[in-house]
Length: 306
Image (tube, rainbow, N blue to C red; front, side, top):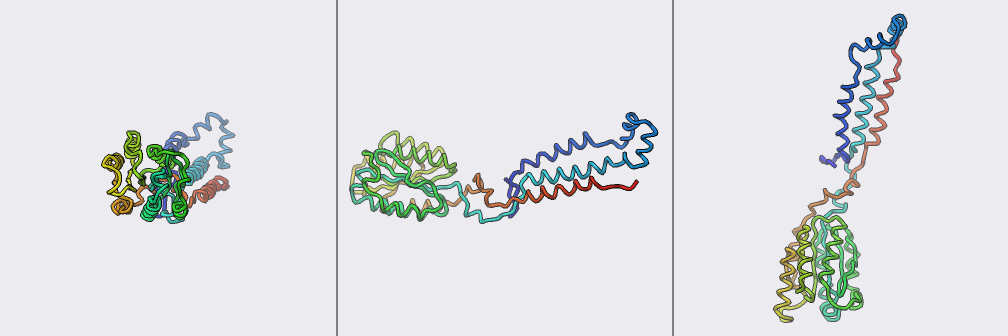
């Protein structure tokens, strides 16, 4: 697709047929001495009668409307279009994906409310990008697919409890793996993955590898910790920082997520132009050109007086 302001070509590769058409015309265009071919094929008296009736003088008149019709047809197939809707309302290829810990350490205590509030703040700062929600404990589940309507995710956040994810344990590596799969299948070019966690399971090599894989794929992993500075040990804090570093993001407390939220707010929509469905925002007028292509053909039916 090629767009210039409010006009565009949806299928510009059809224009490659124009030089092929020019080559075909040069190779097949009747020569100025075309009567020599008739002289070899027709008896002289019959040829004289044909010339008198104008039967051999219309080669140029036949070729011209055909060439015009084909040119107009190629232009029509190239998909000339005009803008029909605001592009900002279309699906974009940047996204924010929240990954929330619902293991017993979190869902069984007072931290769940803090996690829900932090996720709500993340949604508020995701701007016009798509957003989704993944929940995990001993396994990971997609609670909300990527969507432009984040209003549907908010009520879900404050309805979560310790029975939402029945699998015991805590496997953030599976949650990050699922996040990578969701972003890949949605063809997201740049995604912000915000991991809201109590810290369990982050010290595993698998978790760091998944964070690195997300960063390699062009995404970013921020970690919001539900463990206050007076809780846990230095090993857990180091694991949180290591996962954020592997994902190219920040590690902050969920109660004070200002730096992470500021980073999300700074992310603008940058990849709308690469969307496969961006053509929805344009009105294809090629069909009308196809109708116009029929008019040059009518010139071929003109009758010329002898």
